[in-house]
Length: 122
Image 1 (spheres, rainbow, N blue to C red):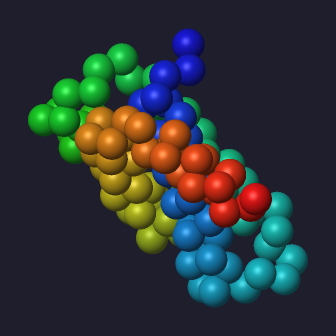
Image 2 (image 1 turned 30 degrees about the horizontal axis):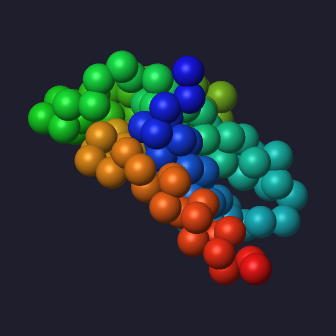
């Protein structure tokens, strides 16, 4: 079931994925690295899905749960790069915390975002 928490977590994962692409692209270069940068964005989107699937939205455990889930999802990307980008791995843990905390606190964020986006395009 797609809940408001799930929508918010996926939206945050997608947005933080764009930030990751920009940061990693400036560090390693954009040219010739599109596959890796796309995989990095997908990893952050997947992080949003995994965190959104967490059944509870208790904010007091969101920081710990977000760090653990961020670590687990980011570890998959980190292993495939043969440990070449520890900064991206560390930021994955931080992004997990951000996604879980904001998805727990502002579950209707995705709804507000889509309403503003739809109103702005008219």
